[in-house]
Image (cartoon, rainbow over all chains, first blue to last red):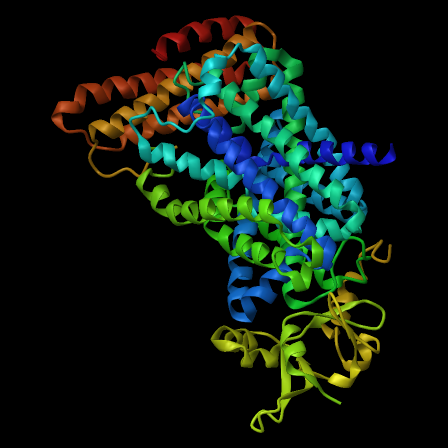
Length: 408
Length: 115
Length: 115
């Protein structure tokens, strides 16, 4: 009984924690531009993150080594260091986007000046990471992030054309602007599979002291939690498809996302949506800062983890603090956080193979994994999604240029 | 006493753990003996930024940019090899983990750092 | 959201800026409707109306700053006028984010401008 409760809690945290600013932006704009036609891309993204999160979790539990440990061991010092630098730049961009997103959500809730809210956001994140135990952080931000379910309610209330929705799960493009369409395929996949997620997930497994007994929970969390989290992405896209697409509205700000809950559900819907966004994006910011610190520590062999005290893991501690400060500095320059979000997702996609290839290699290594090495099913999915990701990684920058960042 | 090369090559880039299970660096390189005789044995584990010079062009660049000393841990100090390379003594005994020692002074200033 | 503007206006970029203005108008109409029915919060309405007003303004500025060939002069003038009217209406919303009467008027105006 206790085990089922534990699994349920973990799933709830995974659902609420699935969505970040990249998902919010790309799913909303995709729905506004292409109605339901890109729902299938979300499915592929969710499948990829489920497959690789489960693999990462299993590797971490069995070998007690997190994902970035595997990068250095598999790729060697030189290539591993390149992967580290590229990964950190992407992480930093993502973190800047998330911090900007927190400030935007706070602004829509409270109306205070943006830069003031940026400072509040960074200080709050720093305080939470410093003072709260790891499990608490994940639970609190995951559970309150569930407020985003309001978008599912709102989407249904808007009476979508369910036939159209169903056809959206079959890849098809009924558009004159193929480059923009493909750009959004890349963006949606990228938003669902941002690298910090797997790094964080695998280090998190060690933070929470999972043992091989917990591998069932790991699988359930990944499969059920992220699938249901994917529903939130669908809800965002369908809402935009119903509200914005018929009116030829091209959403450009977080306020537009808020409007998507405000129109069908009134003031309550708006508040739940903004609070959900605030906590989901805050959780993502924390995860991203941690991911940056984990990667650095794991590559260089430093002590790491929130399960250690700050004095036990001082370089790790300084690392996440520096990440938060650098992220803040990027956004405080006045750059549009929504644009930073779009760039961060696209660049994440390019860096993704360097993340996923080592994981797949290590998960298959019997010397490492013993009986827990990948079976046929995990490898079929692993290889399929790796191929998808390689194609998307190669196409990302050209599409970004040809489609003019999705503007056409 | 030195160890068989196959085992040692398998531990390159792996985590070093001291006697108390604390992480204290990675295996940055290995010191080999009797290579010319065709009977290679591992004499010691090497760690630290200067050691990276032996890890390719990028290693040399990284070594030039980083501060730190080479630490040499004789193979006899290896207790066992499982998920990491476990050593027989605390990190300080080898001169490992000095970066964390330096950083600790900074972090200790913040209230609540020992919790 | 200004696209990279070259020195002369093309039919395509004129269309894009014009669409951007209509998009802001349509979205503003939705927001105004919410305000008119007292179904939204004051901070949200104020901030979002301001964002939309900036969008329309930016599109208008981008148009004014680029020279149009003779064939597009008339179109450009209409588009600039529409941008000005749209941003003025949204600005009114931004200044009075909980005024139902203003919201009702602005909603009608923006609906017309979004066609």
